[in-house]
Image 1 (cartoon, each protein chain N blue to C red):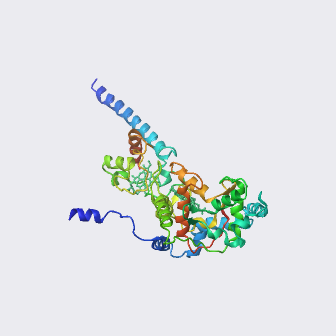
Image 2: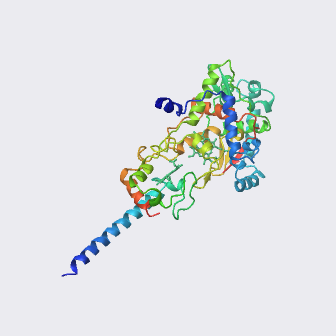
Image 3: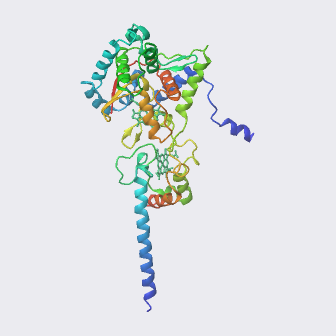
Amino acid sequence: MKNLLPLGLLVVAQSLLAADDARIAIGKEMTFDRAKGNCLACHRIDDGELPGTLGPPLLAMKVRFPDRAALKQQVCDATIRQPDSRMPPFCRHGILTGEEVDLIVDYLYTL
Amino acid sequence: MALTLLLGSLPLPSQAGPEEDRLAFVGHYQSLFPEVPIAEYANGIYALDEDARAQWLAIEDFPPYEFSIERGSELWDTSLPDGSQLTDCLGTEINKIRPQYPRYVPNQGVVTLELAINACRSAAGAKRWDYSSGDMIDLTAYLAFEARGQELNVRVPADQPGALAAYEAGKRFYYSKRGQLNFACADCHVTSVGQYVRADRLGPSLGHPTHFPVYRSKLGGMISLHQRFFGCVRDVRAKPFELQSEEFRNVEFFLSYMSNGLEINGPGARK
């Protein structure tokens, strides 16, 4: 009996981890998909092939964007930080939804 | 004080005239690629990319546009319904025809070579050609070929305010963000020149109009300058414009002015 509680917690924690992994996998797909983020068009990311060079490589995202809201804003609408940005304003122009950007941000934080 | 500072930092529309614009445009590429001679920009991306250039030179050994030039030459010699020929209307010095365009004509706006050809055909009782038709592209390929070595020399005459207005409209179009992807022509061909979008390397706009029409191996056929504009506008998911629309003729006018002094070297061959 004594051991049950920690074991239960462990199971919950594991399924949470699995849910995170699933989100990250979907986020990666959204990031690479040409009809969605197509972020590889401009950024070097992870193992993505034929990356473009218009934007900086996406690495060490936790260090460079400790504030999740700031990262989400950059992906959602880069023109807020830089009005003449060459990065498409994904949310404002209806290319990605806020929920899709959340998934992408989950993935970016693994880089 | 704060207001002055704020206003001072706004990007005011430039008061410079076309010639100042052109010098700044050329200077931008020169400072990015000091080792590239200006005349080389007539070769588009091949001015900057060694590997692509080697492939292109190999293609030029057996030019894929040769057939188009031959067809164009036959069309040039074909009599029109009223018995006249295009040379009677466009000029007898064949190497001097292409370099006269684009030019501003009061009440008509920017007249491109394609517009002039159709006007001549109409006047002689012939059907106007579609701007994407093989006939139109082949004839312009022939006229470009005959004009090889002549320099672009577009004028914005001071006594024609309409010319400056057309030039400014073309310039505005070129620098305006558009489409779902929110790109200006200049975002790719000025600011990001030499960079890669996926596997595509972005070429300079200096020299864009010199080598058209071009044979595109990807498409297996010839395309006009406006068809290329059309493709780039479609790629940023923007509202399309028609070939030879006022918008595209004005951009051609602006870009041709930017390339003044470069040699006409069309037709070209591209990926």
